[in-house]
Amino acid sequence: MTLTETIENYLSHIPYPTQPEGLYEPISYVLSMGGKRLRPTLLLLSYSLFKDDIDTALPLAIGLETYHNHTLLHDDLMDNADVRRGKPHFIEARCEGKEQILELFANTALEICEGQQYDVNFERRCDVTESEYMEMIRLKTSVLLGCAAKAGALAAGAAPEDADTLYRFAEKMGLAFQVQDDWLDVYGDPKVFGKKIGGDILCGKKTYLLINALNRADAADKQRLLALLADSEMPAGEKIAAVTHIYDALGISHLTLQTIDNLYKEALAALDALSLPAERIAPLRQYAGSLLGRKS
Image 1 (cartoon, helix red, strand yellow):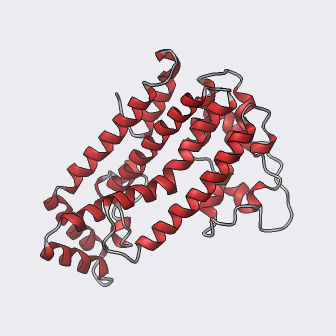
Image 2 (cartoon, rainbow, N blue to C red):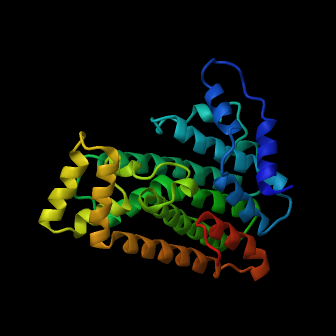
């Protein structure tokens, strides 16, 4: 049974409470729809670097996936208590490092809230810097992947330095994944990407591409770009094409792809610091490659 099949099998046998009505049904429904299961898979892969009894880590993995889906379902990320009642969670896991894992999760939940708030705040700003954006996506996206990798290692009794190394690996990988998602929204193939391109442009979302375009454009191009984003009457296809044309003129696609590549290399370089045989680490390298669509 693959890791994904193991995760789905576990999820399908969770006895969700029926009361209070309206609380648990949405989470049960969303989890039953499947998904990439990036976070629980990463946790189990990290655990399996040091131990083979992955069933021991399953409650941790499912707890993390449940929390992730909770953040997708609720706008108010500050109130995350409901997801803990009646759910497989960290407390149920019979593994090592439970106290450290609980502290890690608590810190991660807070950081995700901070990242979400930064994202909301950025909607009202046109002067967001690249470093501010990278910190926002680190908090909003990468820290939960880092938490998954480190929690898996801690649960397996890994050395602290190896657990920290896995956190750095997952953190860099998460950054690369989010920046790539930004690029795909403009330059991706809709058939492969899974949705229509240009959605971020139409809603004026601050992405790696837009932020760098605004910061690199001269006064005329910046004014033109802001006017395009503010124009609610322009046909969608025309607006997407016009903004993309500005991106092309500024070399934003190349810049973004280079950043993705650098982050990917930094993630793999972190794995080199692990005190484990190369063959043991290979599944994590494959995971990173599959996440970013790499063949090497």
